[in-house]
Length: 210
Image (cartoon, rainbow, N blue to C red; front, side):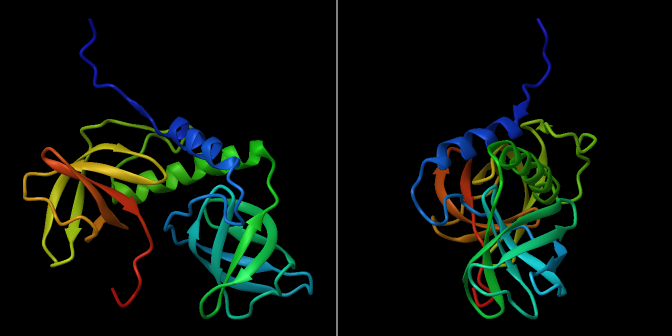
């Protein structure tokens, strides 16, 4: 019998997350995850502007740009690591930020979920080697990553499981309080629940003042 460590099919988990959310009748149907990448924005006036993502989901995105298109306007984005995406501005949110809902087919949403999984894998493991950037990414559950707590202390933790929504880690130290901010690799989130020897984190953008 093989003693090989079981693999986590993270892209499949991402697809399950996407499928579960498709039927939710909300403007923002998908949970965004805090990934920041640079890009270019092309609006209907022909302007090409630098932009940066604040967070992304398989269904929509929040971007920051020096000038924002109008609500309802169609835009095209060229994002580092993701390529060309398009959609319509749903609303302005915050200073210099806008939410854009993608005009994707179900197949394109699935592909975006896979690309997000790859990006999350890189940021979560904070420089660790990822398997060839293939669409299906599997990480060993004993993979170690760096964890930073609100008080500035750090430790290494073992990744037990992760998806586009969050991560579960095991550490050798006392767990933080539920609701506390932590950084896993380079991704922020809040402690959602405690487990024996560790805790689970929901990914979330951390306000600059927090």
